[in-house]
Length: 258
Image 1: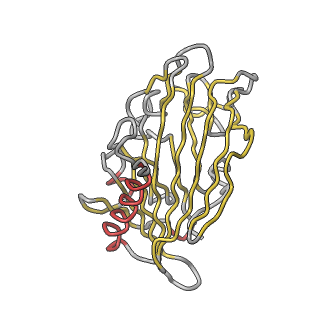
Image 2: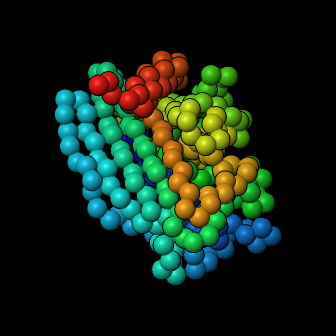
Image 3: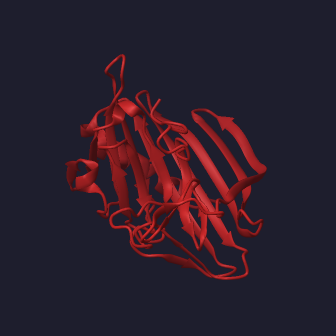
């Protein structure tokens, strides 16, 4: 297991999830909302990403894929986004597999929506929001790695990178696992700033709204694609795993030949 579901310290962390804490004045993460000067406050703004219907559910050799449509509904009952989300898992090698996460968000609110983070609301170096991975307890104090070096969360947080990896160890058998998240070159704000922690707990998040809000106009559609590689490996394997994930992302984005 390389993720943690509903940990006691942040029960809204759910393994790996698309989580947005500041969607206009709404919260699509769960829990309290950062209010500058008051820290975190529980407001009546916890929206729901509501599954509507599956549009794909299939498996083939070494690949499993699902896709579904969702509605983003505020706590007061207003629909602000419709979403089409596709998730694919594929085997890369005997030691590694890959998760592909693709989302298309369409603003149906009737007004422009600014998506941001606690940092865009005034909290320094806390720009989380987007595809967010929370690692197991045993990964605490693990090692973050990029093309520019490695270090702790406090050292690496806020930097811009095409990919970032987290190397951690498991209890009981002392095995090592590596998680590498790759931002697609076509994503808004690529390469993104990264929100990452290792000291308090393990997490990775390519955060397109880290220090600047992204405004989605009424009727506008935005798209994000990510590849996540998971391997029985340590930090030294991160560049090779990132290259494999990037190659699969690129191939999947190419139009099929006639």
